[in-house]
Image (cartoon, rainbow, N blue to C red; front, side, top):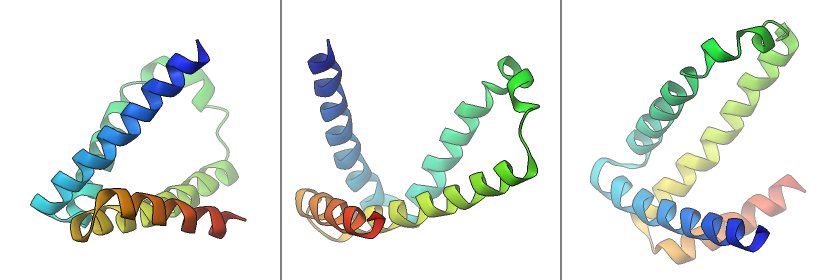
Length: 105
């Protein structure tokens, strides 16, 4: 079962990179990230009514940490989409992944 999930994730990441390249070439990397994050935020907001009891445990420190993590996630995503706009998807994806692995160490 794990192999099936791994293959689904592999196909999903590949399709995401290809579609991200197509979209970023049409509307630009920054706009692609904006619309992608807006769509994701809207979709995630639909879960809020079902998790209101868990969200009451959210502290100010946790909220600030979440905001920091959002900023840390947006910057590499912009770099990825701008790279996909300018270059080859297979080269950009591998180069960025190696760079991010180095930076997170």
